Length: 336
Image (tube, rainbow, N blue to C red):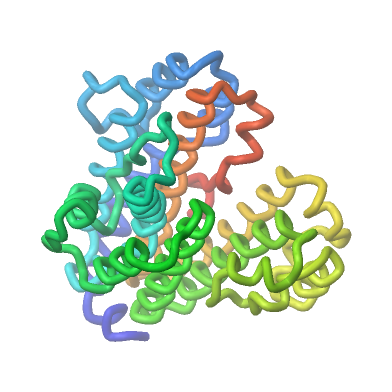
């Protein structure tokens, strides 16, 4: 057990009891189904105000993006109060998932790669202050931003001309590397697996989408650090299937891996099972950072799902189209 895991047992014991109360606020599948079936954005926002998850914020807030930010800010504060100060940075593994679209947006905006209808992403659960990122890009004021972030942004803005897809990929790689580093510091094998498997799933999605492209055109869009070497996923259908069959994820996926290329909804359901399995293993390590990380992971997942539904309703997508873009859904039952 790492020093982080062993030194703060009393604090983790308190967090275990507090989570028993907070997990009752989390959404269930029926809540998601209600939002998916809503007629429009206004109805989704009304449903949001009725959820237990939003009962903890100012009840005068009724706009979707503002609700999301308020709940995220409240939940992050709860998580940080339940963890030792020395462990706070480990939760950045989760908050960084919300930083990625913000960093990408500001870089693309500076490079004139955003459209007129693009909106700044909102999240109350982020590792870096969005306003400070915006200010740094505007006038170079670093504020409290870490040097590795400002160096990365400077490189992106001053390097070779990039398109929007290349910016997103570079940001994703930067975030993944930070997550891997933090997972290593956590001392938790389950958190390490969680991060590596998330990278695997992202790479599988990318490889499947680009399976008709040449290997050297696919590889730049795949991330390092997964359990499946990126090079093994860069190629045609047969190569992708072979890579997955020889990986530890194969037991969670259908015997006929051809369905990965024809049924994205089924893949996302299976991806949810893989992530949920990693999360459930964390819950079974008492008096450690693992259960609190699991709780934070589920909360973060649910807020990302709400954000996706809000964007889909604003774009007038059908429920079926929305389902294809939803992240894997985790519920409080994953604590069992």
